[in-house]
Length: 111
Image 1 (tube, rainbow, N blue to C red):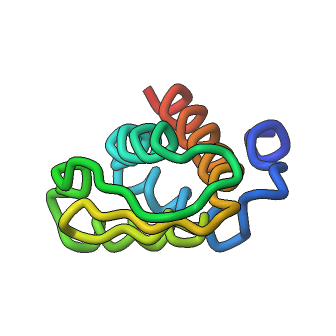
Image 2: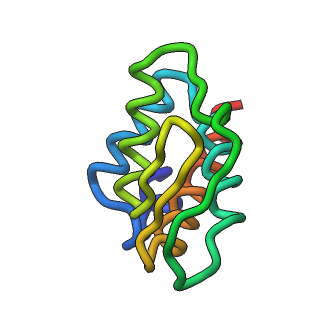
């Protein structure tokens, strides 16, 4: 049921869905949601390019969680740097919006 209602987005890849599942198992969905929300707010639709955000958003208790998050976001066309620098592909907005919506639903359902 959950897969059919939330994750039938053509914007999310199978890899992203697997990373979302792993994020849920690791208990880091709420922190990822904050990070993706912040990045999505800085992404104007249909425009790419670099910008910077608070590097503390990538601060996870374990290295594995940080790498998991960076990999999931990278599959949406957004490259995260540890210093807070962000480089986006031109079409990253719709993919990041789909990722944000999926994280939001997972966060609500897991609480």
